[in-house]
Structures are given as C-alpha cells and as structure tokens.
Amino acid sequence: MKARDTVRARGDPLVRATHPTTFEVTKDMRLTGAGDCIIGVAADKGAADLDPDLRALLRDDRAVLTTRLAAGGKTVIVRSRGSSAFSLDHPTDLVWRRSDFISDRTVGIRSDRVAATLPREFVAALQRGEELVVELEAEIPGEGN
Image (cartoon, rainbow, N blue to C red; front, side, top):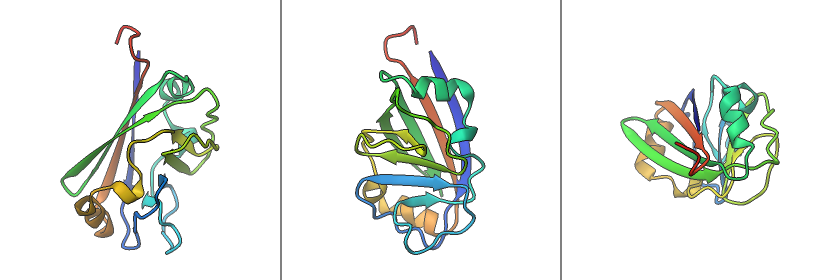
C-alpha cells in the first residue's frame, strides 16, 4: 500500500538551511533569521492537513517515507521513516528529523538529509523565492506494493 500528497510552498531570501538535524516547511508567510531549519514558507498544508491515507501510513513503524523536494529546476530526494508515535496534528508545520525525536510537527524521522546537507544550488533557488513542491510518498515495504 502506498499513499501520496503534495505540499506547495515557496522559498524566502532568509532561507539559510544550516540546521544539522532537521528541515521544515511551514504555512508561516515570512521567515526570520532564526529559522535555520526552515526551507519553505507559505505552505498550503501543515501536518494536520495531509491526506488521511498518508497520515495513516506514516503512523506505522514500518513506514518508509520518500520526499521529493523540487525548486528552481533542482530536485532532492529524502528518505525517512514513519512512527506509531506520530500525532501529525500540527496546523502549520512539517518537520523531517535525522533523529528519532517526535513532536506534533514531525512527518519523518531518521531522515537521510537535513537542512545543512541540502545541495547549495537547491538552497540558492529557495533564497530566490522559487516555488517549492514537496511530494510525500509513504509505503510499507513488502506489502503488495
């Protein structure tokens, strides 16, 4: 079984993408200098708005999340895991984490990419304010996919 959803956001001149353990997309319209993990603002969805089938799959400890980030002609693939501890009920934010830490904003843990490891050409596109398209696809490996 697979489930998908797409979130649309945009970059911001203040995107720094230097956080060593997370990256975030938010519905907030502006970014402050303190937001070193935020790569996209003005998102059309927070964790609570994601497709119900996707949310259900992400709440499985076996779930694998593949996230495709696209901006300015550049694409980055991020692989993460789901967790039965996810609440996925934050109204404005989506956060991917390298660690196993979970909050209401967390959509992926054990991510193989974080803000600081995003290609700098991709970050430059975000700093130009390019549209950011975030495609999330979750699946349970080996379950008749």
